[in-house]
Image 1 (cartoon, rainbow, N blue to C red):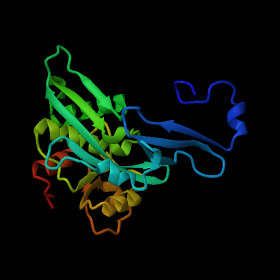
Image 2: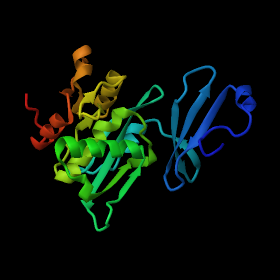
Image 3: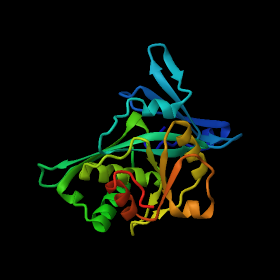
Image 4: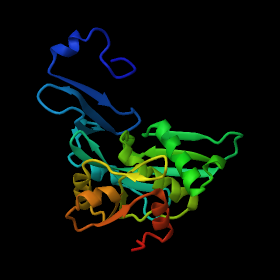
Length: 246
């Protein structure tokens, strides 16, 4: 495998096999992911989650529950999100720490999310909400060594950042799913119903979702769905201690 994650050399070898599996994970982390990047008989980007133990790799039957184990309660700067890996909904925890800088140029350290995507979110929050992230160091991390690449993780990252800089706590039973545009709008995401069902199964009570998703197709769930149109509404919701304005 080369640095880009592709099979090195001619494509002949890749065409000869029925499946190509990539083994992912940092050696410091206990969890490893096997991802399907080619599957002649099924969908790609499916994943299997395993834990490295003294007996070797052991399957993790409920990855979402494991990734949320040890999640801090009533602490600012963290928010849960449900991402789609292949066809599997998976809940992960996004943490952010915003602190006063002692450097001429504020530091940006990001693990588990796209560096440029976080820069985009920081710019949107600073321009639209007036939050001065340019005067602070920003550290972000996705727990368990997971990597969140899809735009649906934007809302959780934004809420974690807002929570950290304002020191307001995101409710522990809240999960956020939405893509954020440059105007601060919250855009619709795919597979919302399966994400909501996974969150409900793990005991979450409230989900921040894009308004357009609920407008097009209402979801039958016992959870409280909080439709938002922009980051302004997300900030207002957090400022009201997690109480909807409606």
